[in-house]
Length: 432
Image 1 (cartoon, rainbow, N blue to C red):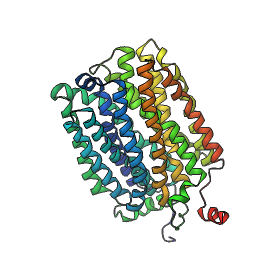
Image 2: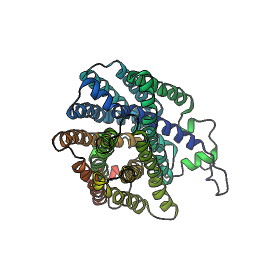
Image 3: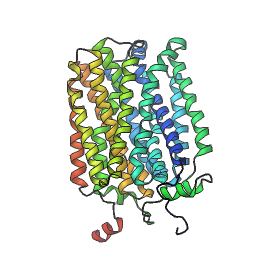
Image 4: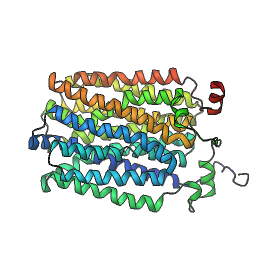
């Protein structure tokens, strides 16, 4: 590596890695269109099929169950196959499953389609974080993760804009078929563009040196058992278990909240949802920028990541009073602040695996944490269904949402006080 010098500050590095980030952003946006469409169509489908709140929560529950199972499998699969092929498998599965919703005619049919969708969509974040680990040095990963994670909010913005229009024009089945074509186009572009940095002929030597500026990873093979025993993986998993369910709740119940509390319907809840997810987009980017800018000013990874997560956790707290907002747009502001803070928190917690684990283990760690997070989401879906059927208020749900982020920060700090890279050889020697 002596012949590849680290470029000087004035040297133009290149932007190929940001093109890759743009592809990850697009995939995540499409992922969330396909995921959220069920919540936008919830009033329509409940009217057509007579679903109760519990019926709907069961559909969400089985999607999350499949997502949990698939997340674990895709984490390991992406580590073995690499981001390019792993993403290809994930997108292919979820596209077929998403379009299959158009042919469902019963509760069980939707459950089966959602199970298949959950299995495929679970590959998005393991593949995306693996790609970021391959293409970005640590000091840029939170920003890159925040940018591609912002695609989730774009997907959530687009869905209530295009799905009602398609549904009103051609019916809800057409909404699944038309949106399903987006991923087919993306997959063609992905296979054409994506390679690992050293396999990319158009990559400049300056940008390659920038990407590889971190110390090299250890070369030893790391087993799943070794990973799950580490305090770092446990901290990441607990944080995901606590916070992922809140995002699931926003995705699957926010249209219903605006419908029940403020009388909105398929034609009118688009603008409030768009506003909420625009704020979420800003939060995702700002959360990643915050810790990255602190690092650029000389702060440690430990201080930067934890400070950013703490600020985001505090900004979620007002959600506890959202049910009592008499004005629709005040409620939108409160909910939007919470979703923005969640995304900022997520941009930083997602960097923990790539900050502390070798690249060869990143997908596996993401898979473990994502599985645990999806299990938390399963519990939240049943809790939300029960609360709404038995109590009829979102307040108990929002109280949980407002409290868990500070708990997650505390768990991360207690289990990973120094935020130092995991030393697997040392751990094994101590165990022996």
